[in-house]
Length: 354
Ligand SMILES: Nc1ncnc2c1ncn2[C@@H]1O[C@H](COP(=O)(O)OP(=O)(O)OP(=O)(O)O)[C@@H](O)[C@H]1O
Ligand SMILES: [Mg+2]
Image (cartoon, rainbow, N blue to C red; front, side, top):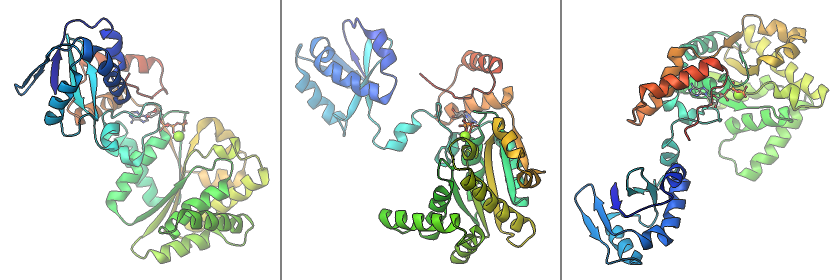
């Protein structure tokens, strides 16, 4: 990291706020390249003791040449404005993952499998979930909207099962075409090497076969497990199960889809299909709809895990540990303020660093 001393930046504070993200760093670079760089920069100091002295305003080229010798990937670098009277050059992260990991929180998005290393606070629930998946043919994670259901399945359960090995995992959310979405998830296990076009054709064919009852889900799952003899179990995850009620407008399709899944769960329960587990995430406000269908109620008996808001300790871990991982210390008072705000408004987990 290197520091550019300067004279005076009128807009410094506003731009400090704006320079907090990578995009803004680039913005700041572009802006300062034509404005502050030309006008104000006189000296450049680096933490390793190097020094650049500008010959005067407008000597951007000279400065850039100097930077090129210091930074291999300059000018793909950005500027951020620090709150003291200096400009800091930060190397633009070369890899997208690294850029994403510059912020370990997911904002309003659910945590995904690849975010597992920054997923904290749900360890106890994850363990319960893993234990339930090992024993039961159906596990329904039910909780309020935004309570973290998808995150705990994708960044908690799935990575843990992945470490154990022996699981084939397919996941999807039903959207308005549950059979198509199911077929798409299964095809990715059946024919992982297919081209995109082939995959689309095969997905359509499988979706129609399942929907028209020409093929049962059980047959497809058996086929997948035969193709993958090293896998002991197949885990099917249907995230946002409530979409079956909100987005799937054709009631016969919804019913038929539900029946296929329940038949599969029944077969697993009766040990006809012992190596299959279905995990669903369902918003509590759609539980009533689920409970209005008796076969679904029967299947859900003893199969649901209720996800509540995180307690203070869990929340503290969710706030502080991702930062710890990046060797950043969150000030105690900041954690306390977030915790107090959250406790007043539980269910709203989206952590956003602005
Ligand atoms: N352990 C965690 N630590 C920090 N943030 C979390 C954690 N779990 C979830 N979140 C955040 O909470 C928000 C809601 O998470 P998620 O989407 O997983 O919830 P959900 O219950 O599936 O929501 P929906 O009902 O909308 O499907 C997201 O912003 C996510 O990043
Ligand atoms: Mg969700």
